[in-house]
Length: 336
Image (tube, rainbow, N blue to C red; front, side, top):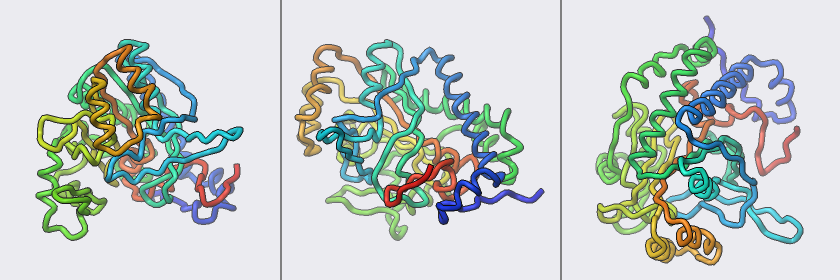
């Protein structure tokens, strides 16, 4: 059976609609999206976690907030007011978790303004959840969610995945192997002799590059948790860990690199105030976030999964631009 390859229609956007409606790549992609949405809602129903839908505009961006962030917020002007298209709806989910008492989730588009390339989209499908509990609770939830989706895809999409990826052995292996964990500091030490695998942000503070992520994936295999991320490299709302300089936050690597980020949120007002100062963030736009903790203190943790990056792993593909049904590039106007 000959493999189906991505048509790369994003290179000729004026012809995209013709390719989209005729090429089998997009029918397979459509069916994978269908299964991911179905599996997501079924999983969270089983977990008794509440679905939520939120406005896509916000006055309080949630990134970029860390020194290592490559996320650029998208500002828009509505009736003379500057607001942002949400890059994440985590803040809203923190409210949802308090309202439901059990946790909240959504799966819908979010927006980022960086240059599109093989790893980044301006608009992507974000699957996020926030639950009462700690980092261990939310990492366990994320692992269950990913395994649930993999099993669902094996049951409903194996033929289509085989046509693109050449097989489904990597899905089966992921279910059997599980998830490994590697402390961020240990990862930096492993990468110290690998050229361009890290960039130095400041004294003793390093950011792991995509080259570094790929080296770790080759060494350890897919689904590696990078734990104890540097506190100054993550957003202000992530809690400080007990290890010096570390946050209670983790990234999950698979396929192209990071596909999921998660963290335990700062719990007290005092911790939040300290973190805002340390991260050099103007707290005036986050007074509501502070007040929320005053009137409804609750320890929550959450994660966000980039669906297109997950699909890259499913299809053993290497360019995220091939995983969008409709093209969106903020350097050009796309139709429809």
